[in-house]
Length: 156
Image (cartoon, rainbow, N blue to C red; front, top):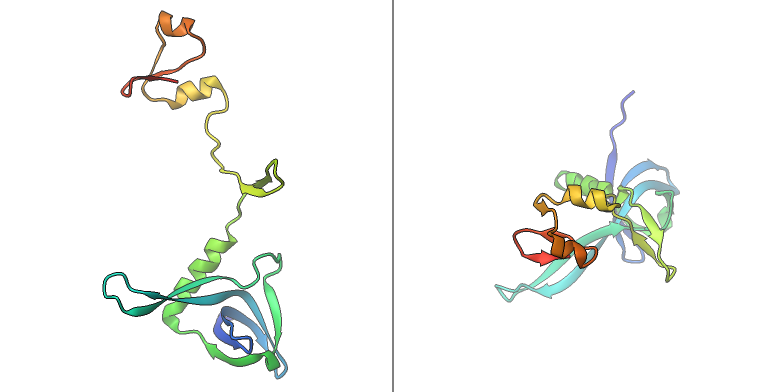
């Protein structure tokens, strides 16, 4: 049995507009997954000078692990099918926000993203990573730990 995803747009009584996948619906509630809140920001177009709106989206509840929500229908102004042209964009947004990111806590207690490629960890790895590495001259060697990179004539 194949079930097609039902993509919906919800307008809440709070004024929030959500894009989501509808998992189920009955007369009292709707169960949605991966809701993305739509935000509009009025601005002036830099070339035409006309008033325009920038539209952006982000997860409705960024800090929850479970991305499925039950919404009481008394909290809805409307529930409509999503326009087919928006579905691909919605799927891309959800995918982008669902990518796992490795984080660590820094010394101040804040979380920071850890890049997967932390670069060379040893001096040998550093030498291997430099395409134009040349052995230092005797004079450069005697001056301490340095690396000569040809092309920009700097010693690091």
